[in-house]
Length: 289
Image (cartoon, rainbow, N blue to C red; front, side, top):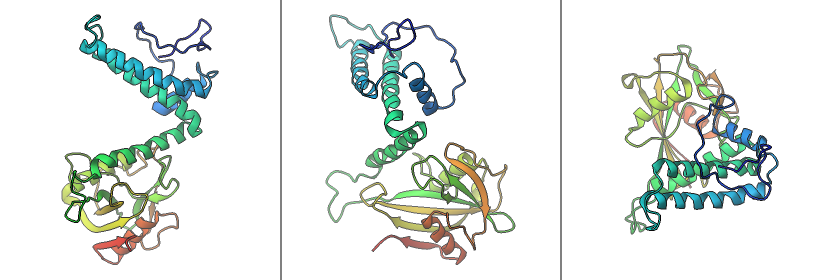
């Protein structure tokens, strides 16, 4: 990706991409995650490179992607086909890495860069999911709300599992149940079961699900033209595995709370939904005028 001098430091005058393939080598350290590794690269052999140079390097890497793609497709008749798919994928990977490294600088660290990327991904992905069809912006058009499954694991003593959010970019330090988004091809209950497995490490069965509430809420910060989400809440009294914070990069701890007396650091709309569930109310709205 970057030209290295004999001393191991980047060239001060140029950061040219290496065009000749290099032999595969074992990593010096075990992989600790994309952003941690990006920070190691920044603090390692790129330590002396100014942030401005790293930002400008992104444009150069983009040009090399185009060059590799033309070489793969034979777009230049004089050269013909002289690149392959792996060459293009390598160059695309270099673009991602070249952008990530100065992001660590500008965001203030690896965790902050990861959180910023998560927020940006939410904004960009919303454009594709929530945008109404062309010509459907009138009164008769369809404008969708997102759907977010929520899972309550409830013990015999009535306490329910909560996770403390960490490095997500949204309500970090606050408590919420296992929850998330629906992926393509999933119904809301399947998504709830998957999210519970990913976030709390438990295995759930559809036949054990008890639908307890849906909240239709709106905030200006929510994505899509409606800025709205429908939260579906399912309670499970049975599961396999020991509930825990299974994604330590997203949750710092798991704890059991009394739903009748929730802590003050429970995310407000979750606290409202939990109160409605305790009253036996299957539906609520929040944030609408």
